[in-house]
Length: 224
Image (cartoon, rainbow, N blue to C red; front, side, top):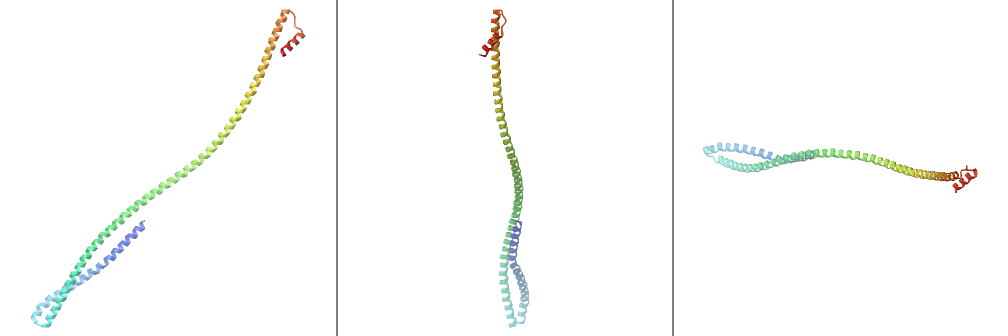
C-alpha cells in the first residue's frame, strides 16, 4: 500500500515537472527579449538625435528600421508577457493541484496506516479466536472422552444393578422358601405339641402312664 502511494506521488511530481519545463524556456526567452529591447531602445534614443544633426538619408533609414524592429520587439514582448501571464496562472493552478494531490497522498497514507493498524488488530483478534477455537476443540474432545467413559461406567453400573437385583430377588425367594419351610416345621411341631398335650390330658384323666403303643398312635395322628 505504501509503495503504491509513493509510485503515484512520484508520477504526479514527474508530470508537474514536465509541465513546468516550458515555463523555464519562456522566461528565459522573455528575459533575453527584454534585454534586447532595452539595448535597441537605448540605441534608438542615441541614434535619433544624431540623424537630425547629420541630415543624412542613410541615417534616417537606419532609424526607421530600428523603430520597426523596436515595435516588433514591443509586440513580441507584449505577446510573450501575455503568454507568461497565462502560463503563470496555469502554473499556479498546477501548484494548487500538486498541493491538492500531495494532501490526498498524505490523507491516503494516513488511511493506509489506519487500515494497516486495523488489519494488524484484526489479525491479532483472528489469532486469538483461532487459539480459543483450538482450545475449545481440545476441551470438547476431552469432554467426549469423559462422556464415553461415563456412559460405559453407567452401563456397567446398570448391569451390576440388574445382577444385584436378580441376586437379591433370588436370595429373597430362597429366604421366603426357608421361612415357609421353617413355618411349616413350626406349625407341625405346634400341632404335635397340641396333640401331645391333648393326649397327655386324656391320659391323666385315665390316671395311667402312656404306653409305647400309645405314643406310636400319637405320632400317627400327628403325621396325618
